[in-house]
Length: 399
Image 1 (cartoon, rainbow, N blue to C red):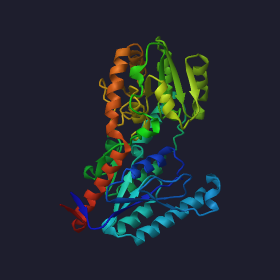
Image 2 (image 1 turned 60 degrees about the vertical axis):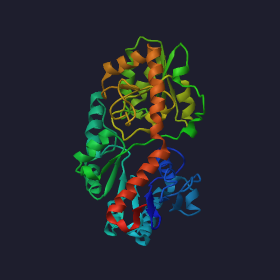
Image 3 (image 1 turned 180 degrees about the horizontal axis):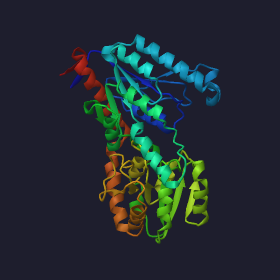
Image 4 (image 1 turned 90 degrees about the vertical axis):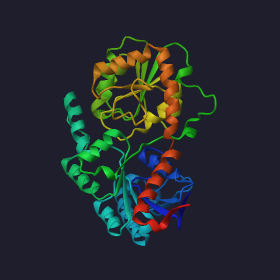
């Protein structure tokens, strides 16, 4: 049995406010999974609109009344105060029992400060390293004859490479992310393969809940959720959709990238495609559709893939979108990014074969149980403890 002489403190840097959405929600879900471990999470962030679950302790950088103002008005102040507050906490910390857990947005100077104090430094990657992401996205825009609007500059690539060299441990949320980190110069022994996940209670999946495997014949409903953008592979999806002759409907859920508005409008006008805005109740859409399609060009470990799988939707995706969950020919189909013909064939195969959909649906719903946030949070907490054990064996023992 693991024993510690005192609890560990996980100082977690989150550069965005918490409002129950986006990657800050993933961060909170992971930290909540530390419950029952010796690691006590402290989330340091600009502000929160919602209470945080146990066992998370919150440190808000913005005091009232600044915390109540629109974020766009206080963002710069919030980021500056966040760095200052985190730096103070680092100075007060015990290096033998503290983890500095950085999500995107921290300055290199702040990471260096943690490292100089002898504190374990850890980075959570929500995407692939930018040195790999930039050329992949540049090529995707070039295929469409569009100027790239992804905002990853060569300066940002070089800065991230220098930043990544500072971490003692980097969490890689999918296999392509691992490869990108190695290509960016991160040593393999500093990379920890893991994943993002899902929280079943959020989707009201009680005993006996129905999934795609339980629905009868009729028009097959295909779902995409995410930003309706070049990065998420939507142009490839719409081109593949035009080639289909099966009875199917496509729902795109998310905000449309401005450059794609004409393309999306034409697809909707032709029929069988509809667009819905971002919704917090994505679970209702998972439960009312038959297949999830996510032909993304660049990702970390997409949470939507795991959520859809957990709700029983067979998944068609790319290697980037597989999220360590989707296994080709087992619980879904994996096609290369940008492969229009293969994507169209994959959609047609599931749309025209109810038996295959049912088999994949049951399998992926079962497989997704390994990706719940309580498990993934505990896994990360154990990774922290193991690293600290090597540095400070006096604080960890096994009875």
